[in-house]
Length: 450
Image (cartoon, rainbow, N blue to C red; front, side):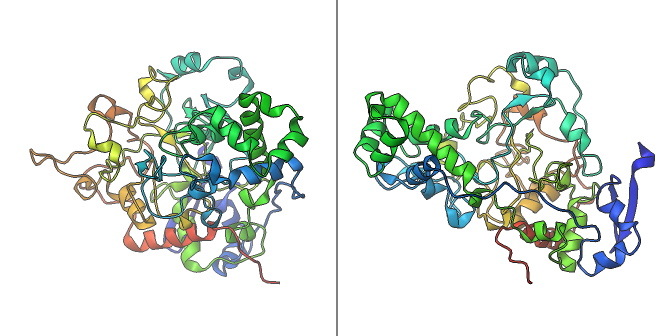
């Protein structure tokens, strides 16, 4: 394996990567010079989802997506929390959105983006392969319980694919596998749209402006069965997200750079190298940045789950109860994995595409800037007093949002979490600024100059 690794020195940074990544490019003729000019020395052809006019089903889904009448307040639609102007993520910096009949009930988690979910795999435990498709989640979790978890680094992303850990699914805890199932949960949640009941939602649809579209698509008797009517409407909403290219345009400057149609400035290029440096940020260990072998653009996630141990957020109303803990995969909002306590406090690794447009980060919305996020990665283990509060006894309460019995689940293996108090942090302030510059190239909407 060692013979396959390439060590690259550029701009004072040492990068260890596989021969099919940036390190390989840099040892090619003229590659280092081209990269120093901001160009991709070996452009690729990316394969994006085909664009076509929306089907009648997707048009119906669009109407449902923007329909605030379905909420108990009459003011909250899917688009209210998943703002199209904010990469279908939260519209502001609130740690969680407010719902219910008067929009006074605070949610429990930060709103994730709805973008780039068309390639999200179903929830599973262990490598995604045919052998696991006929085995129950309980069996897979039991089989993986005693399997040593390999360290993930940007130098060897194959480890990420083979790890026997939870992966896939929708929401922060992966409790839904399809966009159709995902859509129905906030529709009825008392903290979100608070639709009340399936019967009530179906009645509103029957009296609404797209009732004719539903009858034309699903038959004149569709509203005779309220559950079927709502299910079909949620299917249409899923088709809207799949068919509309605005949910997955792959139109960032970085995509254009991969194709040789854009340049990155030196700060962004330095940030890209740091992003993939196991001795520095090592972001690429979980946020995979290479195109797939068949040319699909990178999603900047490995779809896996991590217990990062971010600090407890006192701005969440749920956290006023000291006995309350959001344990991610094993509860309280997901119930089928409650006994798999080895996964408690694990949450889904999100895509970093459009991350620079967000104002709230991590599942509990504790941070509001990329600088704060990088500070967490830098100081969580080297200087935890900068991250966590002190208790009544004056001791630093590290991992204070995880019950003591589950704190061993926190990741202390993957860089940069393999450091210890007093050791040098993974990144300097200047290096963080470069990484943030690179993350800014992942924002969609870049127009390549002709």
